Length: 354
Ligand SMILES: [Zn+2]
Picture 1 (cartoon, rainbow, N blue to C red):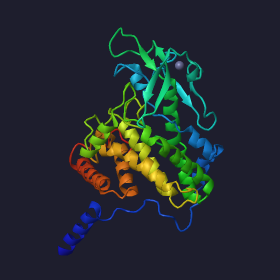
Picture 2 (cartoon, rainbow, N blue to C red; picture 1 turned 180 degrees about the horizontal axis):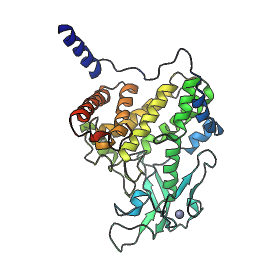
Picture 3 (tube, helix red, strand yellow; picture 1 turned 135 degrees about the horizontal axis):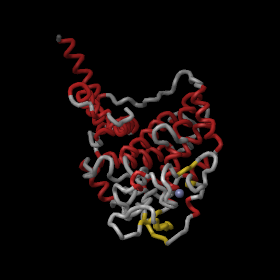
Picture 4 (tube, rainbow, N blue to C red; picture 1 turned 120 degrees about the horizontal axis):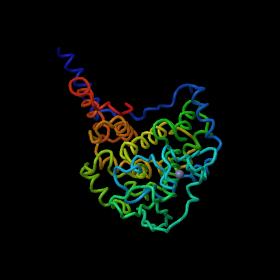
């Protein structure tokens, strides 16, 4: 019995902060040369590293549309705010046509719809910039008969580029490039994946903490205060985000999926020769800066049945930043998760990709 107790104690200590692994992707003795990984990355070689940096939006992607009714059609994105047709409407192809996004229903470039005016926004670096808007008659306003729902096509375009570069679920340029580098050690993949990380590291501090339908973002001081107490005060799906600010729902879980990809790619790319002195910059300005959002929501069960999307980011931050708050929080969630799955309602897996 004593041996069992001793082993159990060692196991518990190992899980709680004793040994955070240094990486999830150590340099393999022999690269796998996995053909599937090579094939998946092939289309993304069409763009240069410089082009990838250029495609990272310089300003945050929100708001996409203002004053929309929470449960209106625009809320779930199934109506085109530009032409009013329903069904899947936005199409963006990063590789074939990176400079345009189209309404599938009308075939028109979303930047070609009429401009009704311009608004000025200010980013977290204090830099002001303008966004043209279109007043849509197709989306319901919060209050009936107010009539003025503004749509910002450039922000929709920015949201599509972020998704296409970083990937939500399985898509995006970053992970196929990083996985192909990990499989082959070939720098042509690494220099592109690093360019994407570097591009986002240049803008992350400027991206505000906000939602898809807010004219004004949450102030940075509030984000920092929430991070200090590990409590955002917001709903786990519907509260503000930064990279995922323009998503109409699941913003916080989507932010987590972006950062899972970013951190996993970073670990795969660590030994690359293509960093050119940018590795520390990416660690500080993208990963550490991006982790503030997760300190604000907390390393805990704060996203209900989307925990399968959220928790992997906590694990990744724990490893990349060697941070016990994130790592121990992740272990605690897994502990709760196993208990829930076996002895309670099992709801934590419903609707998640875990
Ligand atoms: Zn349309």
